Length: 120
Image (cartoon, rainbow, N blue to C red; front, side, top):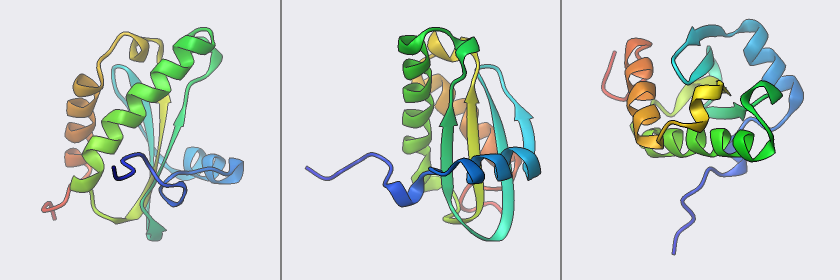
């Protein structure tokens, strides 16, 4: 069975990378999450997922991150393969949402930003 998760090379893993995206990236506020997009030609597609203590206790934070990650994973094949990093920050509403709902919201956001494949 092939590995369907995000490889380490597809994730933002270092604290300085998160800080760079949050400081320099564009903030997009959605219902269940906030997204910070850093668009630059020299970047390979990477994503990071954050759920702070305001989301709830550990189980709720883990669920929020898992839901965001799954929605992004399903959408990833349709995204441009390079040129941006994205960090998703969960809000408390993310613990109640389904990954399909968040996936549709993410697709709409990426389409508006012109980052879906096939969009110029």
